[in-house]
Image 1 (cartoon, rainbow, N blue to C red):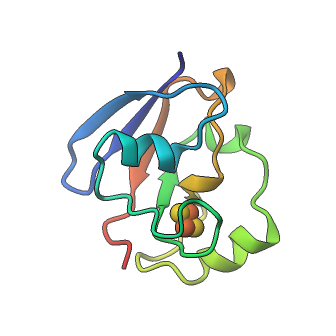
Image 2 (cartoon, rainbow, N blue to C red; image 1 turned 180 degrees about the horizontal axis):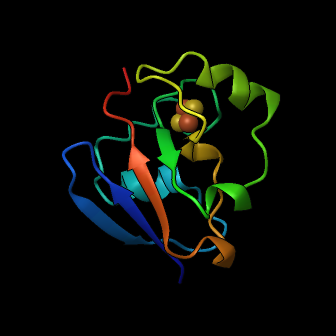
Length: 107
Ligand code: FES
């Protein structure tokens, strides 16, 4: 199973095995990573699953949808060029080893 590494706001790293097809928000919440809230349940409607995706994985992701792009304008932590909503990132073997910095605040 591919692996994702979440870097928490306090600098701690959590390595999580994520099944192909599972979204990173769901994997984080199931793993008890509370710095990702996922308030809307993953329907790209709340922006509380904000993460910063490191390269080279960022360039392997499909571009954000118009809805994701709009929501990223309303994140509690400042939007960066590598900001994404983790509920819109679907795990795949191409993303194995992905390193994601969790945004310091989601509200
Ligand atoms: S969980 Fe709400 S936008 Fe991702």
